[in-house]
Length: 202
Ligand SMILES: [Fe+2]
Ligand SMILES: [Fe+2]
Image (cartoon, rainbow, N blue to C red; front, side, top):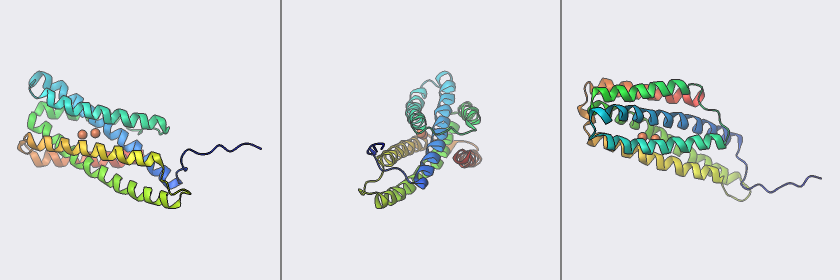
């Protein structure tokens, strides 16, 4: 008779497993996009406004860390990336370069729009994660929710804080002086929401 090895953690329920796959796929796509937006902005500003480059570089470095974290999670859990990854790369890099060419205010308005949507997106995921964690604790034998899910909640909450810090930076750096402010920010927000919707599914 085969010996059954003890499981390190209680297995995830199918619902939790599906949620985890979806979360990692969409967040990896989003952080890939954020990484490339700042790469595009940094490329322009390091020539046109070198004084602004270190601030962009700081936010970019945080996005590189977010991106790498979700790349690692994706590999660890063997979750396929969004089918539209090549589109996200081109769109994000173009958005970064385009807004930076428009000027500092437009680049900051881009950050404001993106981080407003992503901050809200991370908050929605956190609420859902907390609900799933409670459910998993209730049904597991030892009352312990998956360590994976707890670690993921911590990561999402840390990254949410970083994104909200980027939002504050954009506000402090004249995002509201971009022209045309409303058209620019609303267009970018709509684009981000559409990208989130697509990347969660495809
Ligand atoms: Fe990020
Ligand atoms: Fe960010």
